[in-house]
Amino acid sequence: MENRLGSRIRAFRKLKNLTQRELADRIHLSVAVLGAIERGAKTPSPHVLRAIGEALGIDEEELVGGIQGGGDTV
Image 1 (cartoon, rainbow, N blue to C red):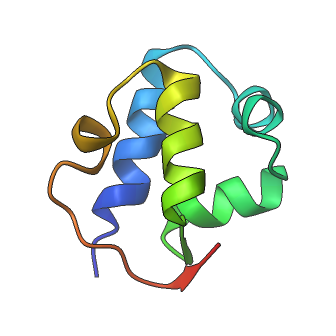
Image 2: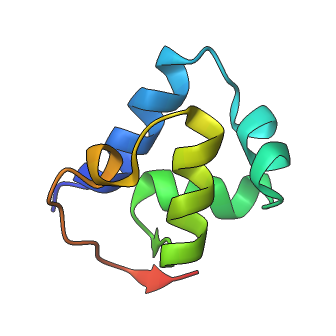
């Protein structure tokens, strides 16, 4: 199954030239959890998703792009 939300988060992170460590530090999350979100193993909670959007400087709606998540919520 394709992990579109995680892929979008990874793509926006790379567009901003951020490493997983840099983004994780900005949103006060471990690199392991961020990696799990990008792989689709965990689904970010609304709070975490909002923090990711703010750290990347993009609107949460643009980040999600109408995608429903899968996996465990963090």
